[in-house]
Image 1 (cartoon, protein in one colour):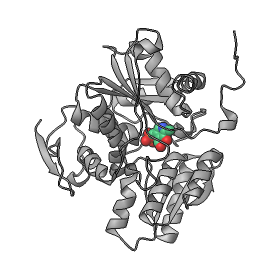
Image 2 (image 1 turned 60 degrees about the vertical axis):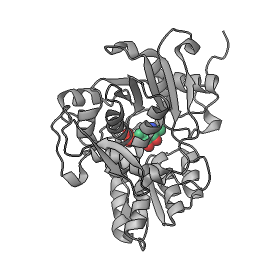
Image 3 (image 1 turned 135 degrees about the vertical axis):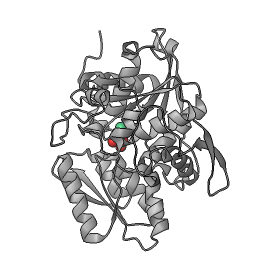
Length: 361
Ligand SMILES: Cc1ncc(COP(=O)(O)O)c(C=O)c1O
């Protein structure tokens, strides 16, 4: 495979994949315009929208865990950008919409809350109107943030189909551009910047664990990681019941239809099926081994991060933490230097899920 060089609009030179190369990991083809290998170059391009890369990287080594285990590097991805003036680069698509169509009537998305916040914030920065469709039952902390960023909040019935349908209706009625939460190559590329940040800090990671829902974050990270450090394996971490591993192993979508929300405490990663665009990328670039985590295990992971790192993270992040601390021996060879994506911190502080649990021995 050859490297090519990409000249971004600010003149920076970045090594990226040659978009004509084959991956050696699969035969997936889409048209060149939208070929997933563009994701790494897009992740690098997307970065030019970023004035201040992720504010915080925190490292916790195996010895801190007291089990002689792997070295873990945690990267928080959510929360406020470092400076109020720096738009979140991960939703690059919003800025592209504004550039391509300065008179755009705005953007609309559907989301379990975090993507909606990011789009709302990006739209505010870009000066575009924004609507966000969220399922009834979305945590108040996420809804409040969406409204505070100036977006219109629209509730729908709690199902993947309802989310999509209401979003499409708004787009149809208003002309707003749909920013899909995962089945959009530029959104995936934005998520790929997480890998850039992480691997810049710890280039020799041998694994990265990513909580997964529709698969945008995992796809973006897997493509960018494969371009930067092909020895680093990217594993998805799912709520029990998603059953992603079977589909990845067979490279076929084996889920029953219709798509549904899983019964899990992790409200950000509730969709059972990954996207039509993300699935082939996951088959090509992510490991087929998937870590499945129960609610109790996620809470254990959340609590650990709260106690040791003084960071409040969502249950989805707790899932990755739990898997990193307890399940790495399930893979061969077990990774020794592992990046863990702390993908969200929007938690209702009045209802921390471990609060009623045993507090002393
Ligand atoms: C907390 C959290 N975890 C994980 C994800 C990844 O979701 P997806 O797999 O749909 O990209 C998201 C996406 O918004 C998220 O908010």
